[in-house]
Length: 316
Length: 309
Image (cartoon, rainbow over all chains, first blue to last red; front, side, top):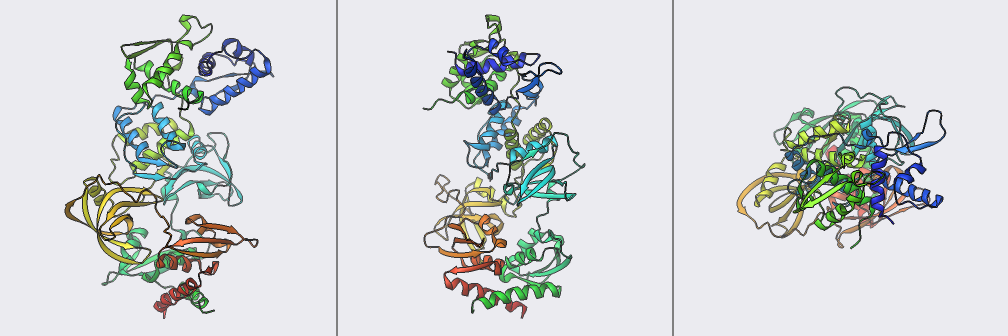
């Protein structure tokens, strides 16, 4: 019996070279090594087909002739072949450093980390030295499907916090340790960002070319990571006094433009545009004794009421 | 040794053959190194190649593979002239790794990595809609330079869990990004032990003029938070609005109650860390145990209230 690897290799060659779809009978005639009994032959072919698809060989199932019920298999060369990238040796060295310096998910050997290495091999193999780990990024199962939809401009739908969301994925962003998909939410008719690890279903993708990405769209500026701005409440501008020990960090976090006043002792007063009061309170409380809500009176009163409730609980 | 299955070997063949077709006479050992396999594995794969081809599998239709003086030549393999396209997972992983490395402050935005990623994005499509941010950190560059040169430095460090600023001498062994933050893995002379420091909490870096022996392996390892047996265990009852705690912190146990609330146990090594958590959660969390934590949270609230007096 012929080796399975030999049969698989011949199967790829035959399906690549054919100019029309081949039926199973025609394939078996051309590729040695299939059992003669019909049912076990079909099972064996199904297993081979699954193996080829698993490694990314695009097998198309097509009608033999127009208006024909019967269909056959072939591989379209333009779907199979990696277009030439013309990488230089220096570029391959740089990519090799990247896939070794950046760990995705579990480790170097399995999962997407392995996928990055596989990609590198297709691009001409390993060139140069490996790098020590410089960054570890989480792996999220939805990412390859989201990435594929993003690059093909295919609308997607998925379940998020219990609801079905429909999105034109304009971009993918990694920020603050999390992966986000950013795009136009078809139902809310607005730009929205979703944390990829909180997607609760598989990704259903529509046909490619289903939307146009706006010119100059930048996922980094579309996703503002200031949660107190993400809300539907009446906007209010808060003023917060931050003590010297945390002033530098807060300024770096909010940006120098947020600083309204610098005091001699090193403290700063920062302005924050608030449409989500819970998120605002949480941010200020994270600074413990180093921060005080100066105004407006409404937000200051909110904070006093919150702290008073908590202060009372210990004695109850 | 387990034999790699047919899928792994086929993927390898379909990757190696196009390279040899383009680089006739490549040396076996160079090829093995380039594709990350042993010479024996490569030889075993190549032994199979002369049996592959197209019907009727006459010599002129079979791939011709010759190995002469350790150099490999392939003929009649034109249909395998190009490697397979990247799968979505492969394309994503390579682009993500490249963009992450490019996001490290100080990376050359016009260098080989940037140009390679440009070519890759051109082939994959999607344009420039993908971005990786590792976050800025003011003292990242001096710390990376010190680690690279094995230089002992003195740092001012804000300990978040205790809300205090200290000065200490450290031997920085490695600087890396994980879980959305930059960290320094270092031996801390103040603690007399290995420590992980968050770079965004470093408030100053000064050279000491001393070097350290970089060959001592780190005991801190990659784990970012290892609860110690001596850490206090706190049991909380969380409302639905506080369920994010379960996603954000490593918990020792989680139990969903019939009323939908979560009973969680977490390790809290530092008082300020716990105060912050309980102040933020407010009425959404109830401290079940130990009782003194309830008192501490109330004290913290009263302390903060004094500012508003």
